Image (spheres, helix red, strand yellow):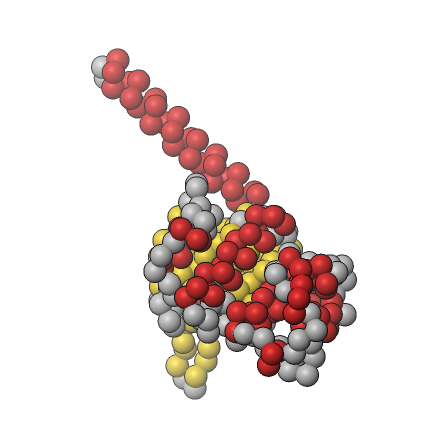
Length: 261
């Protein structure tokens, strides 16, 4: 072997070792970790695999976009992460705790205390004001934030006394986000949060989520079918046919204002 060939080989070995060290560090620092998670539904004699041995890790404080076509398994993954559904096989770790071992009572406590949900449809109580909708969620969790302050943070200081029917779609989704944030959750899970909104309003909601992640150090996971949103994320997880088809990191995430679709 020539001297040049030896040096090149040593460089490759060093680079490979560094990659392995980074992977190990990421795994040790993982705030959320799914390891070979499957969800199988039994329809008579037919088994339907909604999720097929999915594995990925997420660090604390990351803004994550899970992207894929309809029926790919995105919502199933989100439901398992949020404790609304259980995995058939595999392990789900959140903040060092294996939620796949939880019984129904423990899952209820996990959903109540650790998870904030934002859905495509706002699910507000129609006969309660914006403030009362947020306060309602606060009554069931351990360490809530002040409802009025959170509504100010999402730009609804002047709309606290309004009922949902008196709010625009974007304002109703802001109330929904405030309700989730007020729980002071470990994870904020968002299922197509802009699906029912127009383009500009959707952008404003995504900016709010991105800002909350940066300002509060909150771990935010957004699922979408819109691949144009991937540049705004720290981590992008592509799901196809119930499996992770690709995963990538954005070293310099793009502010959502600069993204067009």
